[in-house]
Image (cartoon, rainbow, N blue to C red; front, side):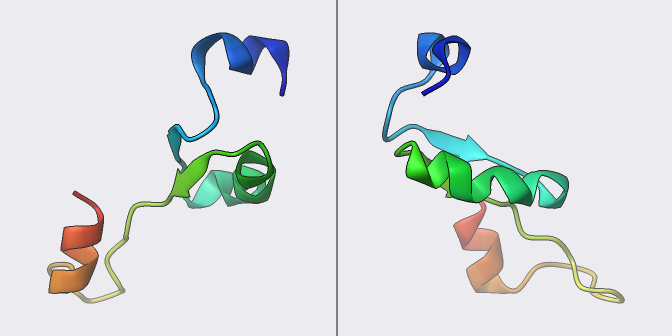
Length: 57
């Protein structure tokens, strides 16, 4: 693990990434992090589906 990252994070920590950083998700998972990406509204939708809303809490 990168020394700078290991100073503030440890394996098992959750890393929240948005769509612009999804390329690092695999690297974070290899380092033992739980990677989560918030749900985004589909075009024309006014709110998230129930399951999506519950997953982002």
